[in-house]
Image (tube, rainbow, N blue to C red; front, side, top):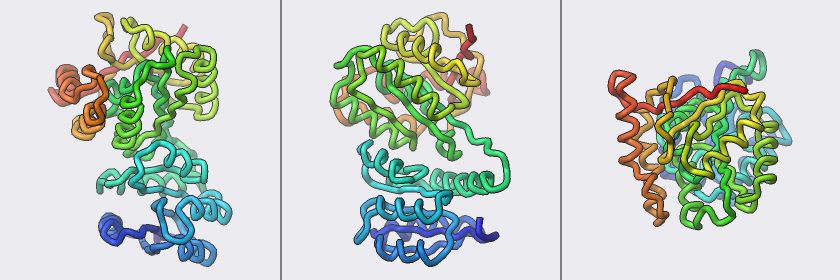
Length: 329
């Protein structure tokens, strides 16, 4: 970083939202925030001054957020860039990441999540400049939409709050396995959790293409952990998603099986994670499926809470997500 002071260029044209986020930054000692309301002014500031972090909206007067991101990348390839946007559709996040953003957060922003994300991004940049990178990369494979949110939504959200990379990859065994409402809900739910959803709908039902997709995703991300449906699942699509992942993720250091609505009685978890702090937001994410009319009774928020309280017996009766450790070979 440029000095002991963290210099932040913050781009937001909505005055009320800018006031809120600047109040978030005021809780961080040592952060100096410069606010600009249009993309043209932002480009001037980028060219004339040094910055340690960029936080930008996408919809800006003048040059839009995508243009600002591309300019920042041309001027300084390593600077951390966080996008904050009200767009919930997946294509906006994908375009932002392709332009060069590091992470995307969906509005409305929550103070704890935002502040945690900012600090981790700045710290990670410091690590890249002088220390080894120890950031986690988590890949979650699901055999039906919503499985990731139900089975390990708390873990995913907790990792995202720590500025770790979290990617959900749906692997469905029929081309028409997901309705329009489910696809819409999945995008909303992952946006609420602050994680990356990679939807390649055209590959649904194509086993060869999906197996290749998993391999390419593993090669690209090099995940430190992968989550798959637990062993003995009674649903064919979930079983196939698990098997494809085990075949393609042989180099992933840690593999965990998570619970779904069709997990069998052979599920014997050995890893328990306290997700009490993430439970309310996890339930909000699952509620997205009901809010858009998706016909998924197995994704009811209260069911997730019941699961979490059941497994809480192993951790002082808090709310817990349970996982089996996947054995190799």
